[in-house]
Amino acid sequence: MHKYKTMLWAIFGILLFLFILYLLFVPLDIVINVGKNQYFVRIWGLAKVALEGHETEFIRIKLNTLFTRFYFYPLRKKKKEQKKKIEKKARKRNNIQSNLKYGLQVIKSFKVKKLLLDIDTGDCIENAKLYPAFAFLNHHVGTFQVNFEGRVNMVLHLQNRPINIIKSFINI
Image 1 (cartoon, rainbow, N blue to C red):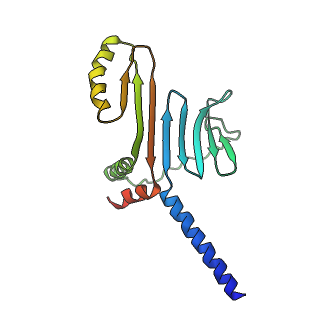
Image 2: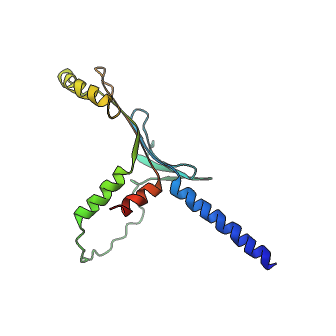
Image 3: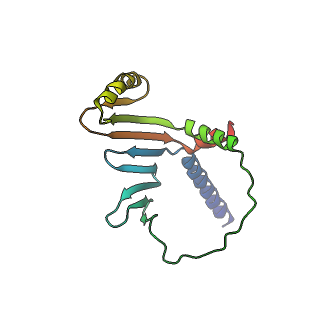
């Protein structure tokens, strides 16, 4: 009987280790697509958090997990507003420079998978001024287009892994 318990614990430990390893290396996607009104953050195989419009509310947040779906309405007024006394607490002054350094390192750890910008400023002179800059950026950064038809579209797809975010904190 003792042999089976240790084997069961060993299997449970291996499965837990593999799950933690999966969580460290699973891709994390951030997608902003203005043309299709898609704004979401997705952790492959686990969850997807999307920001979407709603008929009665202004926006809602949809959370898809493995087996369930939840909706949150962040701009809805709460039924019971509790009035609490505002106490002044002695705040520690944050070191803004170090926070900025951490933030920049995390931003640098993201990879741009897709960048598309299709824009019309409404002024043909401004569009003409943007055209050479966008032609230069097309060869180096992403896809940039100037149109004279009134379309405005932006697609940004960023990808990262949690292990890269952790490494960005360690490397500072």
